[in-house]
Amino acid sequence: MTALTVNFKSVIELTDEQFFRLCIQNPDLRFERTATGELIIMPPTGGETGNRNAGITAQAWFWNEEHKLGKVFDSSTGFKLPNGANRSPDVSWVRKERWDALTSEQKAKFPPICPDFVVELLSPSDSLKVAQDKMKEYQDNGTVLGWLIIRKSKQVEIYRQGQEVEVLEFPASLSGEDVLPGFVLNLEPIW
Image 1 (cartoon, rainbow, N blue to C red):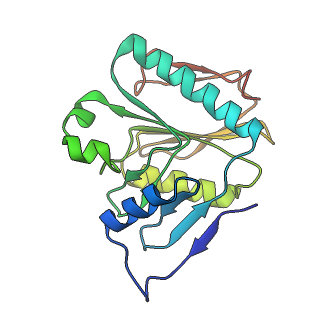
Image 2: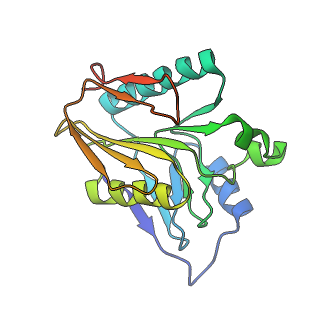
Image 3: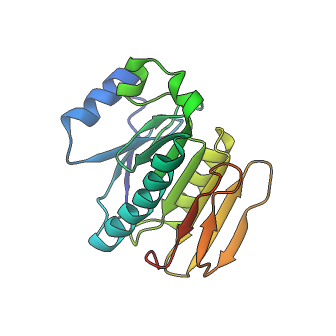
């Protein structure tokens, strides 16, 4: 099953509040919204992908609990990016000072902030091209470090601000570099 994109912009443009309510009223569906207002209905992941997403989130969460440098989010969190898109990375992290600058209301809904760090784990229902475009969108909106993990080919694409995409073949681990100092993602359970 692949994502379904619905373009009804010529009929109605959803406000941020309407989009938030649509998501809340349909908890069994996962929505994203492009910068041009198209609504994307995302299929749920399968068990294998969901388990691996949980493992990546857990590793990031445990690192952050130790260092307390920001906030870690799972794939159910939607962010309102500066370009107007609403996106939900599989795993994301926002520096503490940027998160603390948001109001309580902004934190409770879809935070109007682009994560500093994102991970997308390509699932069997995902298109590689669409995932790569999403990673570039995160980068264009302020993400400093991003990892696109492609299990099928055992590759990782690393997205860094101001640099070309780096492709690693079957790495055993990934470093959080200066963005997440001391964080090392063990990829053994992910492969």
